Image 1 (tube, protein in one colour):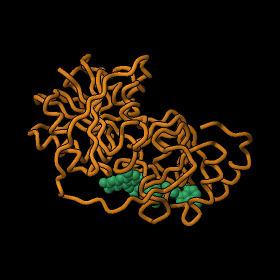
Image 2 (cartoon, helix red, strand yellow; image 1 turned 90 degrees about the vertical axis):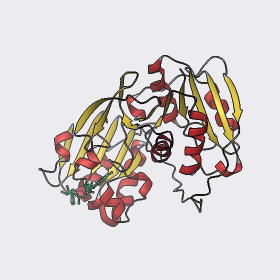
Image 3 (cartoon, protein in one colour; image 1 turned 45 degrees about the vertical axis):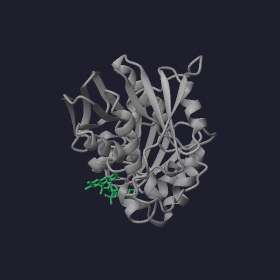
Image 4 (cartoon, protein in one colour; image 1 turned 180 degrees about the horizontal axis):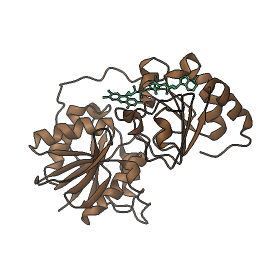
Length: 314
Ligand SMILES: Cc1cc2nc3c(=O)[nH]c(=O)nc-3n(C[C@H](O)[C@H](O)[C@H](O)COP(=O)(O)OP(=O)(O)OC[C@H]3O[C@@H](n4cnc5c(N)ncnc54)[C@H](O)[C@@H]3O)c2cc1C
């Protein structure tokens, strides 16, 4: 029995979430293979080959995989994954999209957002926006799952590099087409791996960035946003935190002008310390906050910035 992990990467190196997924894959006590899909991704394959807990790296490299589309990635997962008993990936949008397709093509089910692997095929995962934790037994012959990276530790570097095997890519599916990518360049730490996150809600209005940037700068923090802030055009879609955005678990999460709707809380409740600033003392965010400041954010945030001396590292 062998376990296959689909690697999330940026074309140069693996994302932290992949190291966490490899760690989750150790639950089977079986050889773990890492699948690196893309174009000119040998550096990524090398990166994966030097991680503990990896038995082999499978590299699928082709020009049509430069911008991995869900249909093409699903085809790779089916072609290569049909020889495995377990296929898993981090619970990120790309993986959710592709693994669900692969599961359908292999005629098996998929278990999403697993936070605990009790035993092979027995998984705990949140449902109903995180208000219930469900434990399920998956009886399918091929186990397909996404795991919540932050629920697992990162695998360590390996003393020796493991084998890298190149496999041919399935032919292009031609069902969708890559048009462009809007990358929001930022000198802030990456949201998914930042130790400190400062997030704003709709209440910040046009001052979203002017208020949050100085605070994030002082704390070495990433910036996140509620869905209402994103829908209002105050923040980019890729920094939305919550059920339909990114799930994070930083050491410190500061929610500013965020009501604390269940769908938002689903994305932050594993944070170690939660601080909330809100002018409504009954705002739901205070139910999960470790520290709360009741008051006007337009006054409190600049006061906080002025009061913070020194800076933390990322
Ligand atoms: C299927 C589904 C999925 C969803 N997924 C997500 C998701 O992934 N992420 C997400 O965030 N939401 C999600 N939502 C939306 C969610 O239900 C809430 O509508 C949203 O989180 C509210 O955003 P908000 O707190 O910024 O805005 P509001 O609900 O408008 O809250 C604003 C808050 O700011 C406070 N405030 C106002 N003015 C000030 C001031 N001057 N000083 C201090 N405080 C102030 C108010 O008291 C209030 O608590 C989802 C909803 C659905 C139905």
